[in-house]
Length: 639
Ligand code: MIG
Image (cartoon, rainbow, N blue to C red; front, top):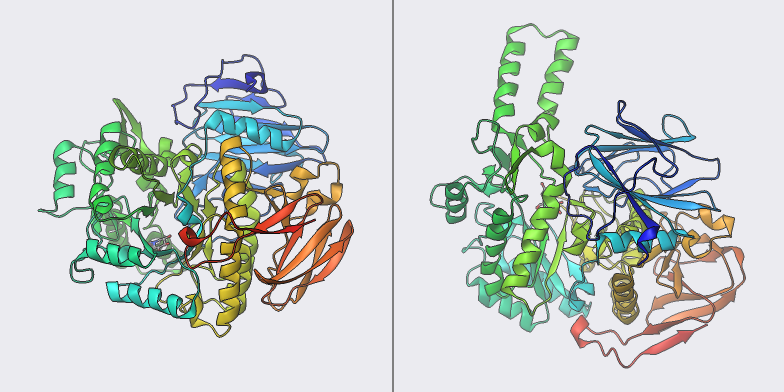
């Protein structure tokens, strides 16, 4: 690649985040389009009236990010509302595009960064830092797609999962025993709904201890893994970073003895609490610790497991021992006073400050292979290095195998080690739309293997929301139905219209040859898996404002229905296309539609796919498992 397309500017004394894999010589002078103010710790650029901003990966709000304040500060944030500023991930790459010219920026900084994109002043884009130490990459290209490609060269190739990971996965927090999991398997099998994975949430562990399996709930675990695999189902457990403090627990003791946990300023190991109760956090930013933690996956690999999801790695902190002591002190003081209304608010604030407290993230330190760094300064790298630890271990321990791996939190660079799921969304129509809008930004940032909790994690889903969400989910690389304990059951067999769900999941399996070829191409050529319309139809201004239709690869456009009770929707066609209205892989009607606006019917069980001129959509005959698909015997719908 022509390195002339990328310029690097260094501000202050940046840490190496590991995001960038290419050597770029340092430029001097002012970065194009930006002014830097060291004293104010700001970068600024003007936004013309026409300017759109694309990128920032996993964030709230729409495809065009203009008009809001986003913060890179990985957060355990289950409320994915418009008013929030941070979610689980920090992906500091974006493109400013006024329709004629465009430019990309990647701000490589592991700590807090604030992106004020026309929030304070609609014509100004200000980037603010706590520490003005970062590498700024200015990436040029004649169109956004080219900028994306150049950026992706800079940060390296995306993670490639095993092909079975493109199948359908059923998950739920609350499958407690092997029999619970067998029931899920059997119900899907009875109905003939394809299924490749069942996810195991924290309930499988012994007292929530990482790398353990509860022997009562899962006796003869390796046999169980075999039994499931013989039925074509892979088990995929959840892995949390915190190590339970418990004498006699080998992992805890080994980490303690070797000094592998994050330490406070006085050198004591930080005590935090998460699911296991009190834990220490492994210092993943240290290479010895990464190797040690990673080697522990061996028990799971030996048991025959081939996939994992790394959770809670912002890291989420329910409380720290130190802060909790402060809270109790404060509460005791308040108890002595008679609480007036302000005292009452103070009391509520104190109690509300317990989990994920910002002060706690300043309480511990990392040993970056010899350099001591306070956690908040490198906060967004914790998940990257947890996932890297697993990924590197798999290369050592199972070099011939592809392992499924995705994480909740992330920062740029982690896309080389694994994928992401977008965390604890809710069973809301607006979160289906959010899923649609996030996907292209994740693609831009190299997180190709991505998806949301289909049906919604929190709250009670409804049959129609689940169906519409599955209709979009069949196009996302990670296709997983997941929900929280205590919410309405949402395995597809819980609903009335079982045949419709079966048809939709079968359609996904029919699409797998197309989906995997788009995915592999995107991974190899540093392209996007899903794109906003504008990226392929630059010049058609109408496409700029289309926020709920996406291009999947180069052959098709999708227009998911994301509103309740809708039996159709408006679709904008940037050129003549062939509509395929699928009810199942072999039951569909087609119609050629002209460029322009159309109201298109889509009953609850119907999926709208549009084939672009001169392109074709291959379809396999569905099978119950990805590995049984006949990828060589495809039917093709052409336009
Ligand atoms: O504090 O493991 O995002 O997918 O089901 C909640 C239980 C911990 C959060 C994850 C979610 C998972 C849940 N975990």
